[in-house]
Image (tube, rainbow, N blue to C red; front, side, top):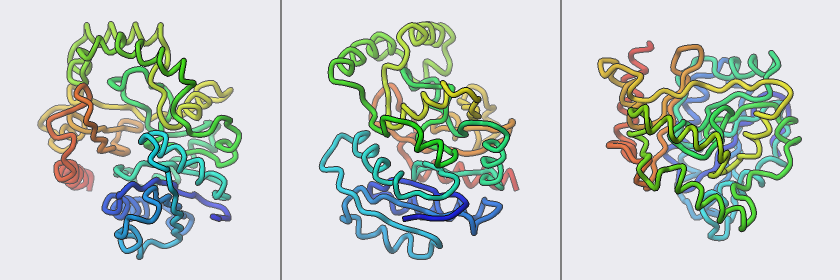
Length: 297
């Protein structure tokens, strides 16, 4: 069990050794108080990923727990791993984060803690608007920071889906909200009419694509106090001359805080309407990150 003050960083690994090695190094390097950060990695391969231990061997204050998701659907497997992790955390703060994230913000830990201490329920990266049917004004599982006590107070766990009957209804409604596949990411980011229609439909239908941790996102929205969400930026909002920032915004996910880059999420998907030219290319993602880091230096 992870005990004591500070921040516990929880991430779920599905053969994510390379991503997690970069992530842990990145979070430590960018933190103001690295000694206060602990890592809890849930190995969702049930120990089959033989590279994980070696990749993380130099990470201080690290605990790896194996977990067998029993061939569950991907989001359900992810959720079951987080359900296993939460009772093991006894630090004051908790950061749930995807392995394929890179943080640009120096002092990210102090920044997030300050947001909570100022009265926020949670801090993090929302689902971009092009991920239709989700909550866009609350942190998501990609980067979700708050007090551990707050997370423990949310009921229902990390499970992504509602009852079978509701799931079937959502499946049908999502088709309409997505305009039967016409509302692709590129069209939503560049087309005012498509964007306007889908936002109107979302306002009527609500959450039709609840994903891992949606109850926590909803709890943050419904809390008596506000939450801080980073600003999502797409490729039409960044000049191509900005190089790395434009590539991150156009092909991946880019989030700003107070007008400055805070993090990027690689996020690759086989779903056609989410796909971008380089979205599944980790080399392109890392190259863009390197460019942005040079520009910020």
